[in-house]
Amino acid sequence: MANILLIANLNCDRILQLDKPLQTGGRFHYQDGGQRLGGGGANTGLGLVWAQHRVALVSQVGRDKIGDWLLAEASTQGIDCHLIQRHNQTSNEMLLVMTPDGERTIIRPERPNFELAAPPIWELWDAVYFNSSAEGAVSWAKTALKQSLVFAQLAKDDRPRPCHILIASKTDMAGRSECAPWQYGLSIAGDCLKYFIVTDGEEGAILYTKDDSIQVAAVPATIVDTTGAGDAYASGLIHGMTTGLSIIDSMKEGAKWAAFAVATQSSIPGEALKAYLE
Image (cartoon, rainbow, N blue to C red; front, side, top):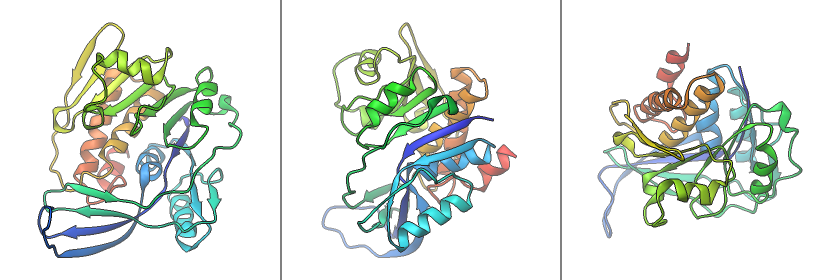
């Protein structure tokens, strides 16, 4: 299988399950769901581990008990954590406020600046996935393009994401640009862009290329928790592309993984995805 490097966050999620949908000025009861492993690094990485890929994570956590717990949990579950840096601030919990319909609101603390060190030897990595605001990510991506298949998640702003395959959600695209989608993708990813994928939940995803656009349907699922669905889609897509599937079949694989994710009461992939991969 493939050697895959993820540049993404590793979080300690704290789940607060509300008794009714959020509304301004309301009062709510909640159940504390406790801590769980989360963040794009875990949500994307674990499915790829279960698919027998070698997965290493570039991230940073604090030199505290939560940081120790994060490294122990991720390592135990098969993610290579030797490239994770430690900072001297507290590894605060990420609060995920869940409503009965499966929607979530994320409340997170400000993270300390994360500066990437010298880039790795890219010949060792078949695929690289960027889903981090770390300083130096652009220069890392530019040096990786000639050696590895580079995926990137659209950032929350219009910062560059040099890559071959750019992934975005329709929600993140709202109000960004009046350009055609492909032109917008090029403005973010650069001239190496081959595919720009925009996901839209139950409506599926659209593949944009230089010459065409193709709709790929979602896989129906009973929604329990939407947290991590985009990460699961990305991991299924990466799995497909690194095992020789076409871009369309890889998108279909991503849709399957996302369907497993939303049907699981967790941000990380559930047992149904593991059983499917086995």
